Image (cartoon, rainbow, N blue to C red):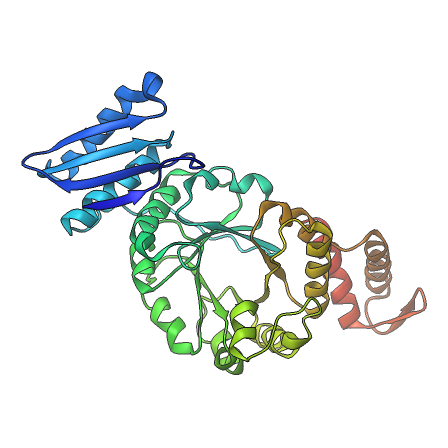
Length: 366
């Protein structure tokens, strides 16, 4: 017997598909939306079975109001896993990568479809469909199929679409499905990046390594410069702090050196340094202070585990009104004088100060 998906109390927008051996194909449907959509759902089940040659199995489909792409993913995963056959390909999706600042990247558990459709409404710079830590081991395959169908169905506007993979098979399955970047966890060597990069072929998909160990931090620049596919490099503080035998604190003093090394290595390699998550989802002021501290350390952005963390993070990475005013004065004076060294509001201004002010004005309109 094979079971994929979920149904029951507290579960919304999903379906549970149970597949058992039987003399011939048959199915039973239990649906919370039977009066309105029962006929359509039955037709979808029959078409999915036909894709697999109407195999001799019995399905129990318990539907909690799943969108069609979710139900299809659950059916395909159930058939494929039970019959030990390949997942039918969906075909390549047209994709063009657009570079942007990654102030916020929102983690969305890859096996929780109710969270998918509205994730972009909160305007994160990127959504991370997570196939690693947030997915139970026995649901990894079903989550991969679900994420594939989501990428082929949902439109997230200008929000970038990332996937944190659990292993190279995830990358193989999702290449060509419109992924803007793969996040590679627990990277400790350039070879781990090059293995993924070699698979990507003519796609525009980028790579973001996550450094989560003492060894990974030691090799930060080697990793950051290991492939032109690298968009940014992140640090995972929970695993790193555990690896060095420390405890994570509010001040971050136990990981300050490692964070600085990631920032320096990423900037030296010309990619974006990306800070870790802030775990207190109900503390918006704490999120703001954490994001501001990350910005002051040189990070380009932070990871978010709840939509309410996005707005305070964006505020933290935006120049304050005073900073914008000062930056505007510096840019105007420097460009009027044609460069050199000058004084603006009792501050010495040279080319590096001008460039920093110019970037601040650009960030103010993001």
